[in-house]
Amino acid sequence: MTARLLDALVPCHCLHCFALEPGSMRLGLCSACRCRLEPVESADRVACELCGRALHGRRSRAFPLCLPCRGRSSPIDRLFAAWSYQAPLDDVIRALKFGDLAYLGGHLGDALAESLPTDLTVDAVVPVPLHWRRSWSRGYNQAAEIARALAGARDWPLRSVLRRRRPTPPQSGLDRTSRRRNLRWAFAVQRKATRSALRAQRLLLIDDVYTTGATAEAAARALKKAGVRWVGLAVAGRTPRFRG
Ligand SMILES: [Zn+2]
Ligand SMILES: [Zn+2]
Image 1: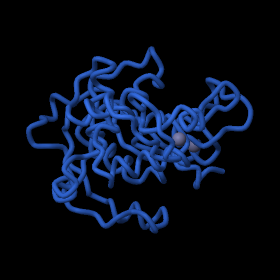
Image 2: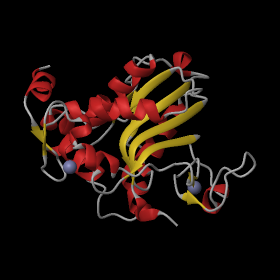
Image 3: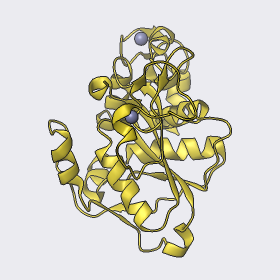
Image 4: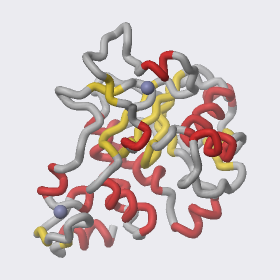
């Protein structure tokens, strides 16, 4: 609340270029830097529905996936990524995760809600959980901050039905196979979320960034195991590193 009030009253500097701008700065970025955010999908760019890789040519109803995704099975049924994870979005995510600026999660959640298809319907929004130890030391879970705003903007229930069974070492620096091994059995459905309540549901998982998809796939697998019918994943950033 205080952060939002200060945000509205005090001119703040842009998280990327440090320019000062009066009033509230959406996403913590000045208007020039906000224009530099690169949407994963645009009028002239279509992306694979499973991994967000840029597709060459037009995506059709018959071929919504890139070649590697056509041959693999994934517990995630559809990926919705707002922007490419590069400057200036990386500064926003870093400030959200490590700069104690939890309110940025609200800004990202609102923007992500706007970027989702208007005809998308889900039964609930589920944040990818942090292990309680990391969440405790950070003071919040950035995915939950994004999820809360998104759920509010689209009028969907927020249900934190997943828990992290064990702390996993940081994923950065690991290749795809090591990431998957690192995350095996990392997630479980909360005991209070009974399987009968999850059966046949359509849930939208929320995370801040999609890199290889290993984290979100491990979370989605736990949901599918509990009987969830359809799992979408909405993220603010999709790293371009694994594209192509
Ligand atoms: Zn700026
Ligand atoms: Zn793909």
